[in-house]
Length: 183
Image 1 (cartoon, rainbow, N blue to C red):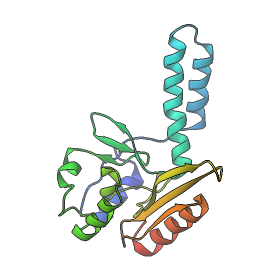
Image 2 (cartoon, helix red, strand yellow):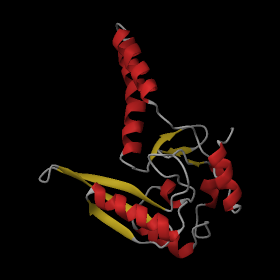
Image 3 (tube, rainbow, N blue to C red):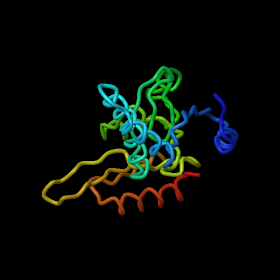
């Protein structure tokens, strides 16, 4: 797999662990093309064209919401919306001695996060650039508020915010990436 220039730079700077990324960028042109193909399709195939369009439309939406989660399992491994791949090597290292350290590992496990949130190497969303030590990892829709409330964590210091408006979790993520080692 060919790494983009910024990904090569991240790998060189980290020099501790090589991160594997999958290409997850979704352009407006790609979505428009898939929608056009779907609209022009007739019969049963239209459903499958819809599912293809929906896959990429959801990914683009989640990235714009800055939501990190394992959105796809493939032969490469579990893939985060930022492109980080939790492959067999990452999975094998996912224990008390993981790169995050045993106390950070325990802190994050206590939150009930997905396994992909326990590994380092996430990229900033929606830009897919740099490294993020802080990111949004979950949300809940609250009907009575007609709003989504988000959860964010920092792998650098272990601090979290739970059930906050998107602007507050975005501010938390930006602050912690600046002070706790995001790039």
